[in-house]
Image (cartoon, rainbow, N blue to C red; front, side, top):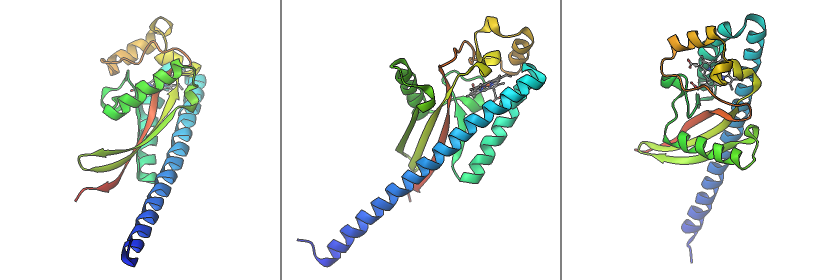
Length: 195
Ligand code: HEC
């Protein structure tokens, strides 16, 4: 039998874990909202710029606007927001870590089984050497608007190819088909550090 201290402790423990579960749920909800908005906003800006000035100028959207948006989202939410891909164009910003690689491979398997890219997401609590992290990923679909820069090489204009080749010598972000997973928005937050 538990004494009253034990009962109070048990109750407090249950409340604490319910509160923690609540916290994780609200973080997941917020992550989903942030990631969906980001995907829609990037696509919108790209489509606008492609129509207005063409693909060479639109490179600046993926190159400058997106990192600006992700870092301002990170500051606003207190969660690290990035974009990653198994075949990144920009090695320094777009390379996934081990957890992100596993999640992206899992997304590809789910697409092969018939799931829609738009609905793919994953969330997990992950223990790392310095503490426990909340991690979230939402897949970024490859759409027609992405073809001028991420599609089959023989369909990409020479000007764009030349521009990308000088800026990204290690570029692997070609040969994507519409409907594939182009990458993912990845969100990470430290929940509790180790003393
Ligand atoms: C006008 C050319 C252009 C178009 C169109 C374009 N991108 Fe990009 N994309 C780039 C460039 C350039 C980068 C590298 C950005 C950087 O320097 O971080 C990039 C990077 C990315 C990355 C980050 C991972 C990586 O490969 O480095 C993702 C994800 C991405 N693009 C998705 C998309 C999606 C989805 C679309 C269509 C909605 C799209 N892009 C359309 C040029 C383009």
